Image (tube, rainbow, N blue to C red; front, side, top):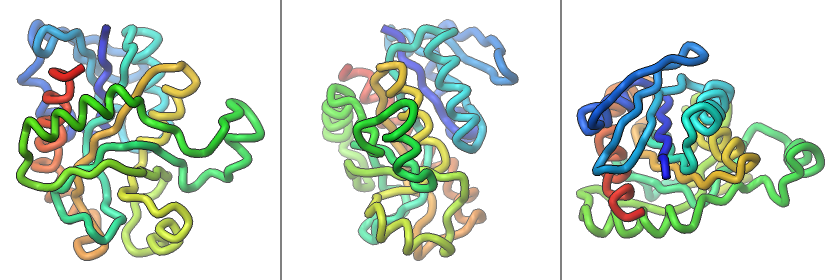
Length: 227
């Protein structure tokens, strides 16, 4: 078993690097991949860059070139549900492209049965154990994530909430899930909240990204122990 851990930005990846034993780096498609072990488990990790295309490129490389047979997306997200506070964490039960017409995915390649791409049940079970074991200071939720090619502040928030009722929004998760779906590779996404409707804006995200990334990392490492 080899687990691929994919983050969008370097700030989200950085907390993992001190935990990788026998780390070696390699490059492909302008990306740097870090291979080694964490708790005697083979892993490879990368930050892909922001956006769905970057995430898809990195995910396919993790699977094809590095042999990852499990994908974990770790990082941060914007909170959409009003119950979410800064630094709460959401673990994906499903992921949806909020900016892609439903028929594109269900009536054409890859002919999905639904626009909702389900996370792997075994990984969700391990995540639930991890959250319980960690007794995290902030809350952890399991639910729907949506993804699109735009950082959501106020514009578009109400429309997305009305149509999808997600817990979070980001710019990579559904793309990662999409690639995992067509490759029949299990995935889960773990993202900690950096901004909400009450605390919005890119400045808020940038301020909260480092501590939020550490929270996600802690949950991912605990999850790995339960796989």
